[in-house]
View: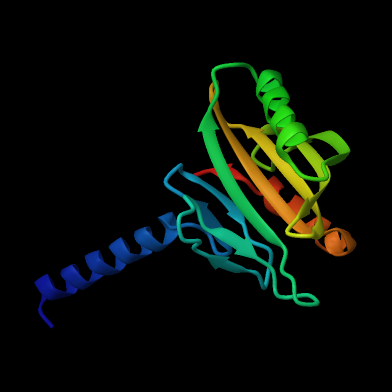
Length: 171
């Protein structure tokens, strides 16, 4: 192998190392084109949903049902509290069987502040419990993380939901 070829191979190897180091870290799921990611719970699948903007994260089946984590982002011109108030009004008026369980502050590992909102609702004749995490990304950009499980199995997933939401970061 001549000197030129050797340098070319070394340059190619360095380029590949750079690409690997710049990629999303193992276990992270990119959220659309928004430049965000979260860590997926171990053993869960990432699936595309026809017509949905973002992929969802799905748990293994448990008694015929799977827990899910889905995402939505958008712009809102008001402050964070106004955004939260608007979101809660929608859930209170448009959600069948709505019952608010609790609401609390939370912070991501990357220091984005947010609100965790837990509610119980009826979907397709099943009682579901949802943890929704609302994160302020910038002055007018917000991300919502929706975590859903059957009410009776929600506690089994609560830690995975919380860890996923807390792992949010802007890439």
